[in-house]
Length: 134
Image 1 (cartoon, helix red, strand yellow):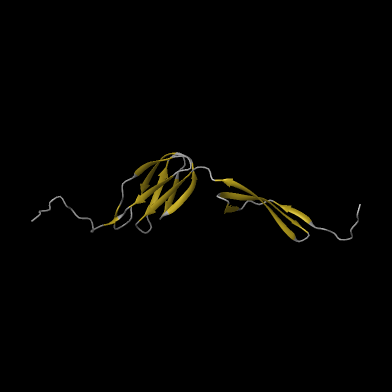
Image 2 (tube, helix red, strand yellow; image 1 turned 45 degrees about the vertical axis):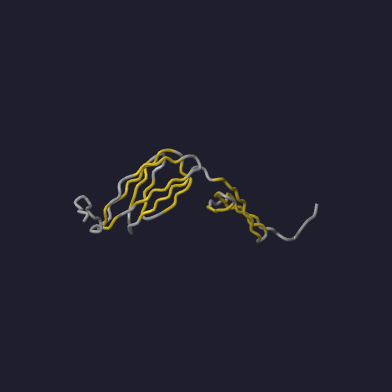
């Protein structure tokens, strides 16, 4: 046995912090410091589920997705790790714009779907039912 007069400080602190890389996401599950040297332990997990992308053309547009997992938001976004199933989006009203109709799509395992909220500015929509071609 070797004896040392140097005291080594050792402490462990558990944290959860998201990280990305290696085609998935990870979580730091423990952090240890030994003699002033830090070490981190990472666990990587492949993403489970699919990706839902929402694209809206009006500033401040709100929307709500309902399905196996629900989500509400504002603006354009990409959401990951959603379970497979049928999803419906309802777009919120934006002053000065015509609200797009709701849409339903099916997300398959590890697949992706995209919802497009094509808001049209009021006054720019044309009525083409009474057009006379000369």
